[in-house]
Amino acid sequence: MIREVKTFAENEFTEAGGYGLVLNFASGGSLYADIVRGTPPGGDDRTADEPMVEGDPPTPVPLPALELVGGKIRTADIEQYLRALIINSGNREISQVHGYSTGAGKFHKYGLAVTFHRGDVCYVYFLQTLPAGRAPRKDQDYRWLEAM
Image (cartoon, rainbow, N blue to C red; front, side, top):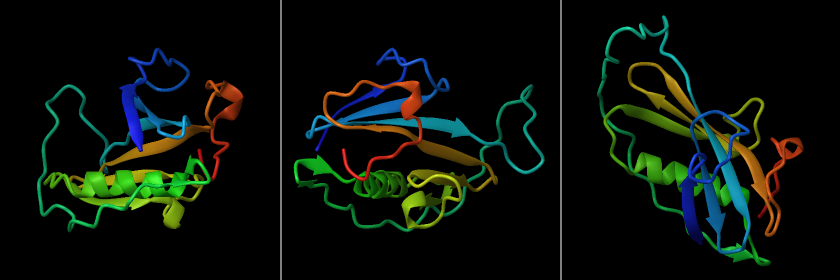
């Protein structure tokens, strides 16, 4: 179902932060996911190397199936698929991963919050969800489609 993944830079997308991914689907739709780093409690000393804190990784979860429904892929299904990929990576720095579509997000309907053992969080905001044939436009930010 996921045909191609490129970074924002590879896709020459400069309308958001410096880190992000563009996922293109079999349906022709696409997802622009903006990745934003948070800081741990107490902030970061950016003059020193980042300390790595490890612990038990999240318990693996089943990888959800991705299917076209009416020729489109559901946004919530993509969110949960990406969540499972991160959880199942076994990364010992990650303590938990929450998907916004399950109620974890206060302001975003879709996206992910990846919490690390050192207390910081990385946010994967679903910036744009686009149907087949539509190019990204700033006025489409955070206007999520149920399916792409």
